[in-house]
Amino acid sequence: MRFSRIFSGLIVLFAFTLEAKASVTLPRVLGHNMVLQREKPVCIWGTAAGGERITVAFSGQRKETVTDNSGNWKIYLDPMPASSEGSQMTITASNTIKLENILVGEVWLCSGQSNMEFTMRKSSKMKRPAVEGQNPVDELNYAKNPDIRIFLVNRKELAKPDSLHRGWNIARDSALRVFSAPAYFFAKELNKHLHVPVGVISSAVPGSAIEPWAPADAFNACAYLKERKVQNDPGKFYTPMIRPLVPFTIKGFLWYQGETNCFLNERLEYTHKMEALIARWRKDWGDKKLPFNFVQIAPFKYSEAKDKTGLTRESLPEFREAQAAALRLPNTGMIVTTDLADNLSDIHPSFKWEIGRRLALVALEKNYGIKNLVSSGPVYKGLKVKGNKIELTFSSIGSGLISKDGKPLSDFLIAGRDKKFVPAQAEIRGDKVIISSALVPVPEAVRFAWVETAQPNLYNKEGLPARPFRTDNILFSQFKPDIKN
Image (tube, rainbow, N blue to C red):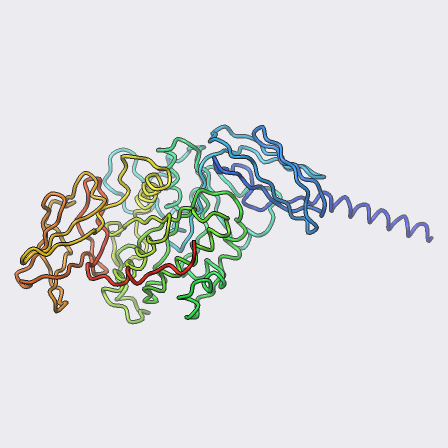
């Protein structure tokens, strides 16, 4: 009887040992159909039994490591050129995992709130724009490019291993229907110009403020914020939806968020929150230079919302100013969306295809060094007072300044020393804009697009709208980055 019990115990122990040895698992972001970042060391990681030897083979490379006492392991593949040829990755321990149809190209992490989460299915039901050729509203009917891959983060599942490794999909059919429209159209434009595979990860939550996307210690690292208690659940979405993606190798981040914090009537504190989030994400990925490109939020009647907290018609422009101030941080880019709202009572603008395209333009120029490409509309540079007029100069004028609709320039205000702003006449003269008003004989300051519903017509010839601004801006000069980057 005693021998029988010992023998049975040995069988159980042997079975447990086999199970432990066969326990190699991968994070959910590593799977079939994924895109690996080109021209960078690529991290592959997971868990297994403590002390177990792990081998990763891919594209002619073979790397080995041994798990630590906790069973964690990590290896880096050498940098690889882009490849549209689907390849197999084999991860071997006591068991073997084979991941199929893997490409090498460009990978971006896309995050934010509902306007980033906004699905291709919703996009397919938007008002049809008058365009020649394929209509972006019908993109689901055309999308079949195997070089574009998508990964949709599920906040309840990302941190859990997936034995089927099916998180990535080719951007088409049912998988694309529920995927982020801005992220997809960004990937499509990037692929069109770079001619390499593009993978986009969407990790977004409707209605979310910025605070849940970074942990509390990230905000405490900022001296400005440390003196003010950060609310709105710091880390709530970072922990299940961002942290498990680290250290998957990526090119950069796209960020489309702000509406919730605008409702909270934030200004300079939002700029510092962006600083804290950017610094933390870059620290997590071990790269202080990772690009961070974002969307300046669109026109909307914030001041008419039922739950407004002291909001006025100028609250949105002031919040946009706080967003633009974040451009003082290194390797950041921003797009303007003053022209991308067809219903000023809908906080979800229709034109997500243009959001994606403009984000791609920024990436192509700033992050990929594509020359002879204009990624921004006119940006205020300086002024000169000449008698009863003000002469404005701009950067990013491209091929020249235009009135998009051919009508007199709209949404300019002018004021004298009394700071009483009145509507101004504005006209383009070469690469300058001349501002005046009979009511202001001695002008000092100009504001542009300085109400929440403004949809001005000053563009460059490349079709990109001018950035809202005020020449009496003090916020931009107030923002001094606190976190060493």
